[in-house]
Length: 357
Image (cartoon, rainbow, N blue to C red; front, top):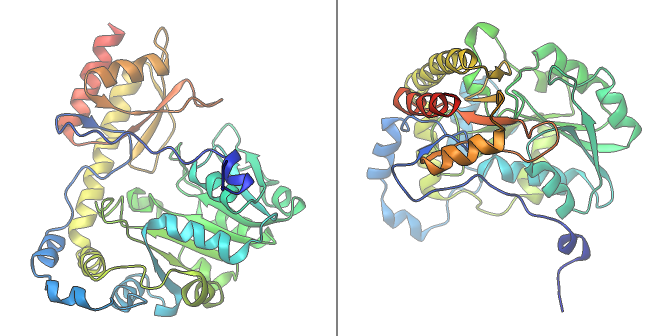
């Protein structure tokens, strides 16, 4: 006998990347920043007074919200703090979508979106990407025709790393009848010469919320800290009605605020990742891989024959090098490879070269 709701019993859960216990594993499978968090975060932890844990934390994390608001040149009421970016994704569905109403995504996309939709018992409208990994011109109209209430769009895209320009996002938001969640988990790794900045969109459109996370750019994946940026009429229902009470603890608020305040250090790690990204693209291309142009801290690489992606993934795993393999149509000849440190990337390249030889 089962007590699960029927839709929960019928669904599969989210499958995360492998998390090895062996410290000697070269872990290039879950898009973590390979560099340590800012020194300010360590100081915040060391200075934390455990006596504060007797009391509930600030319910809205206003200290962090003020810091983020100053960084983005917006108001505090345009920001909601969440337990990782994933909590914001769940809030977008539970706040704005009734069970039975549709969720829109690209195909392929971040695999958690469909899982969250199924939990809410919402049908999923998938719009296939073009060969350049960008949405087709009829993207918004297709979602409107399906009655989609919330659309999840990750930019730069996962798993390809392709970036949509500010103007393309604006065109989609302008045409959509529902709410657009712009997932910018990897925004910090975009080349500054692109001059990408989506924050002004929240002033131009009343139907867009932007997801930011400290997991990638600020090396705080283990902290689980994210935030949303949007017009007040979208932020306040989540902040005041559907968010968990006291969702962010004292220590997390202190650490995240310290991280956001030390921009120079964080930007230096982003620059290092971008330099290694260029080098790894060159190395893999010389070995016959086809690489999708990426503005993230990972690459989507088509594996050259006679190897297969699954074969190479398993071989690397035996050697203590983890990359991500997706057994899905359109991705099963590719590996997603996180950009590591120079020694990690050199180890990967040497192992691949050995297999190809």
